[in-house]
Length: 359
Image (cartoon, rainbow, N blue to C red; front, side, top):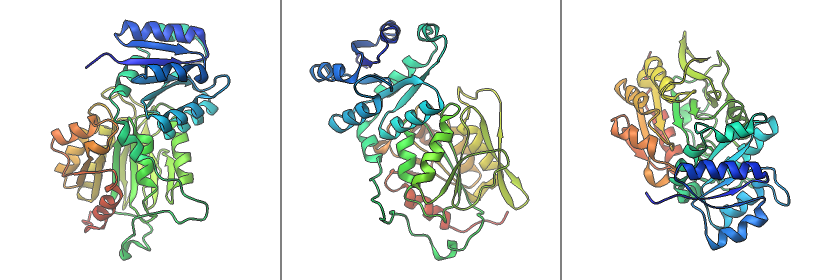
């Protein structure tokens, strides 16, 4: 792979210097650093970067506005590098929805030490971003819904129309590029879709912001999961950032258990933890999907779902921002089908309409 070219845009001279030193040490070429977007853009036009590392709060133009401008002019992998506050969490969520493919949280205290720490995640985030398929990210962006317009959704089958609970469970593993991708799926599903449990790799606080945002866009009830929440039709439960989630059976009902624990394969929440529990609890009544993301989380869990008789799929390479997780799921033999992002809502509803097996 050729050397990655990076532009840093941050109003702090200390951050720019230490980020440049860190990336250069890792063999990444820093082609420029600017204190705000209006300084950065002319330099980018003469030597466009492979990856943009972008702050949020800057003078003259904020990072979100600049991000949208970049995506409109020349879609480019962007890693947001900002401080985590309640407001910052919401802002970073806006950035991911606008097309950023990754983010790193800058601490409020000990910033210099953080930036000098090789394990702070910035280098990995930049390398992952450089592999992003930006054309897929652009296709994943849902068209805005005009006020008063009817949202496009997959038509439910007649037998689903009055369902109050579900015997089906849909489990999804998703990571890099997932914010726009999962939005493109959920906004096209009707309220009659079986209950969904999702692991999206995110740190604490961000999953709550993601769920709240999607809840306002979808016909579905989208929530950050709490221990004991029921899995019912039309409800989407996201594993909280920093905590694992698994499915449990409570009589005839499905509920989730949210719990602390060590990192599993470098992740908490971990998709394999969730998917394996779905295989055990729901068996042939489960539907599993591994979507865009880096690494192999979810591959083993999807294989267990397949072995248990569940319906399984992986997102296709052309529509993935990063094909790592789906590729590994296919290699492990867990994906019955490979499905494009465009076709995923219809595939989920078709799988849900197949005969339910008595528990």
